[in-house]
Length: 293
Image (cartoon, rainbow, N blue to C red; front, side, top):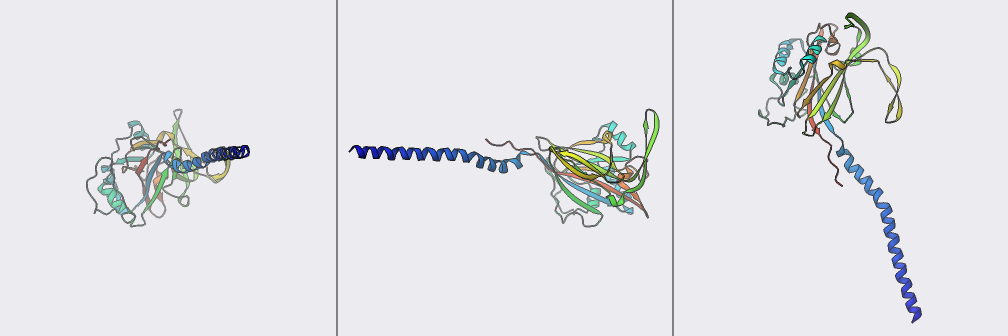
């Protein structure tokens, strides 16, 4: 009888040990697996993202009246008076459009007119690939911008760089200048998403010039070797504009013969005059989601 009791006690003790061991193993393994799953599921939702459509429009010689009409349709008063003066001095012209493209912009982008005419506040029209870019004079690109990310936008590529470009400005009451070789205009575009679904779009013009140079920069604590050309940034010409999804920013030059830096961005003279426009539209602004516990 004593032996049976002793055997029964050992069986119970063995069962308890096995159960405790399994629980300890489960506690050790579950957090790592759960953390990996949560990181994959939550991380993409915890980053602000802003989607931009970027149109590069090459104007034909017979579209001067259409370009004049476009500047009549946009709102150029949304920027501060001081910034507008500085932009005009340097040959830049900037305007804002609502969620519906204007008649002139519709013709420039070749957007079909068979779409609803009324859009409520906060809504915007979706444009399919069949609706735009029916001619080679318009190119379209879509960029999704994350925080602290800058998209590099060139209206003219490096193959159309200006062999020589002279720029003059006032410094300490005196006129000074510099000549740049192989120069091309570059826009650095970034976005900051707001909680209401809008986004602040920042556009900084820079002049890229010269030859490629080998540089070393730090990215997240890692040193990266890269080749790039020198740039001169025009911080005083930085454009910062709050947009709702569907709204547009139009950028162009005041005149093909402007004495400012704007002509390096939007005009070229080879066999004839070539003029372009840069058009950006905010597709969406998605704030970071709050992770569930």
